[in-house]
Length: 174
Image (tube, rainbow, N blue to C red; front, top):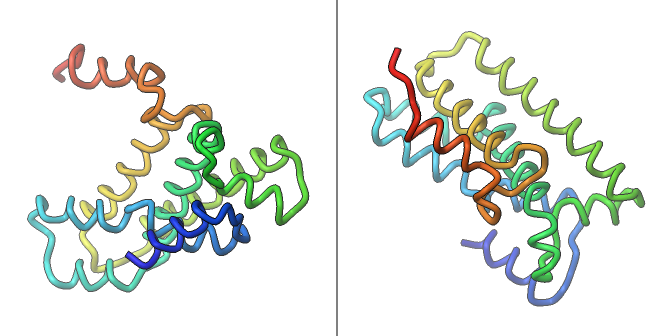
């Protein structure tokens, strides 16, 4: 709740925070941990140790949340800018005094870095069931589809229409 209030305050005061503050706050407001916690309720392996692990904000979930925030803000940059909301891209441009193209290039690098962390953490020996780790990576893969090529699939659903049709309408049983 506090993070949503912080984000709202930035919006209503037209204050553009530092990129570090925006990303730190935004990794929470993206709802990645809340969404994955809800998904755990449908998994047989959602035991107390998994919930406790998730609450420690391990490297995998921190990278997962950051990745989703960056993808969302990059894909929704134009939409958010039109409605007067500051974005991670604008914060980065302001902090590092770079162009939008340079910031976009840096975002792509950060996505790659978060993927490296997530893949390393998934391959590391852990008592956490592999299905839990796979679920987190699968949610990240969905974000890659929704925000593919920097297009926001939520505000421009036509951009992901073919993917949805392939999954739900034209799927093929194996």
